[in-house]
Length: 74
Image (cartoon, rainbow, N blue to C red; front, side, top):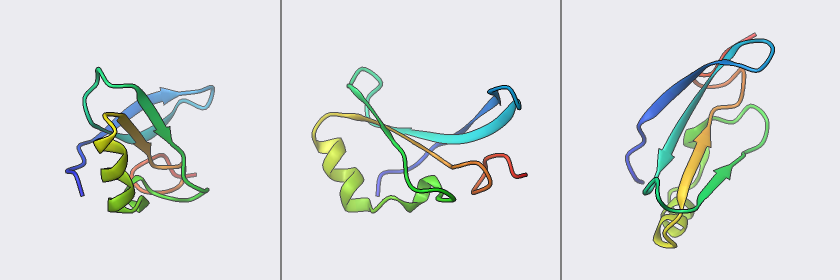
């Protein structure tokens, strides 16, 4: 799998929560925001799926849902 460099977005929404996310691919490429089911972490996507999308010259944005991974827990 491509190396993930996680970042944290702070003060998101009216509750001012933090959301962990990662970007893969070139920032100039068209973005695809990958949303996995509730409670899933950004590392849950299958490697072959991410690699196939990157080969199509897309920028992938993955995130940890709230209450999972490094995002805010309530």
